[in-house]
Length: 312
Image (cartoon, rainbow, N blue to C red; front, top):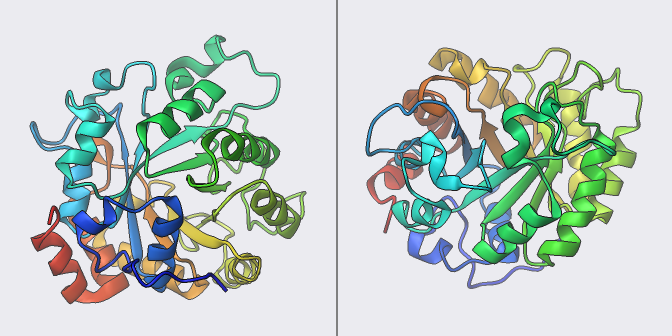
């Protein structure tokens, strides 16, 4: 059981001014205290913007999100990302009152030439020692380690880079890690057809420093069942870590009824964080799908309070 701090408020009801002061350990506790009702939106920064002077990050918080993940973040020159609309990382955090904004990094497979054409536009967002140091220096709220579709990343690469991330970023950084997409060459974590033992991988990720293990969402990826993910999340919790379920595969761009049904399946897995992918116009799902997911997770009272006071 996690040792609790009375000064940490659950994330779904904490004021932005409180959350902005939380370090990684406190943010993890705030998620834990929310009892499976935390919503994370994801925005792909390389896509054209939906509205000028309003980022998808702001929209996701405005429609009920509790955390936002930046995908396609170019560490070499963040201001060039269309989705940031000229703001750097710290500028985005200021826009949303200090609420948790994190960065996704793709873990390169071992031996990959990081200057090769194979990476095309992924080079700026790849997990490297230099980029991990930047995350630490910038005070990034959290990082998520995975593998982009078509990148060839193995779960073993994610395990390896999780250890490196913990060594570089220190104990305070909140680290998510796992494999929830790109199941063609190697099956995702939780797929019964995977040729690796999922629980052994979970053990390795936690041992190497992962705070939150990432799983695919039942109902959004084929072959993934509530029962299987529930079993693995229960195992993860007993090992002292938290869990995230990721609704993606472009199902995030489906209708609101589908979002509601998949979210209810995700809740049954026992996950602590419900993430929704970046498929859609403007580098993210429709605002109404964020809203539907939020209402399904935590009801209208918490959702409306978040919408009314996003920067308080």
